[in-house]
Image (cartoon, rainbow, N blue to C red):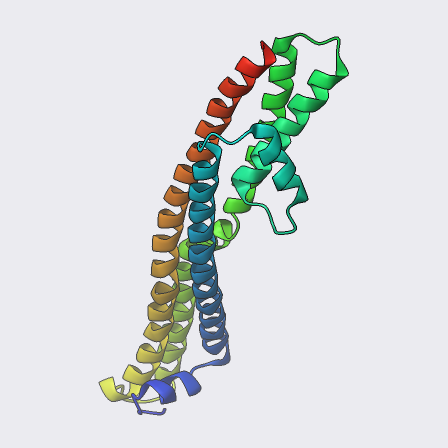
Length: 224
């Protein structure tokens, strides 16, 4: 039995199943860190875009000119711009259609904005299920590798007449590495999931508030 306790030797001399567990946890950790950084950039971009749109929206600009500018934009629209576009487009369509009272026009516009809001909320939640999965399952995957490695260590002791700590230590150490890797993958994923879930809820609530405020403006126009 190899008695070297260096980290590299422990990993290289681990059993095949434990090595597969370590590889899986390493891949999950790398993937989760990639998504954590991408999600951070996405949330910052979404919050900045919401700030910019609200500044323009409440600056007193004409809604028709703002709608035309958004429609003619060659760049990717922000979430609030898409919500505004959906609501105002449906409002104008129903109003020009004729035969509908103000309440029906407003309700149609609100439905369009609610659909757009739900679509934007779903887009904000991307990566969160994966982070939740990594955070909840990685410790158990690491524990499985630990149990398997310790089991192999004790099975190997059955082939010797006298067991010593130096004989069993490498096997137990390599097994515990799997637990450490599981925690290393899980802890950042759980922290990021909780943080970004809170950010998504706040941003979604902000979109919902805009829908209500915009609906109030459209209601005044519908009765004009």
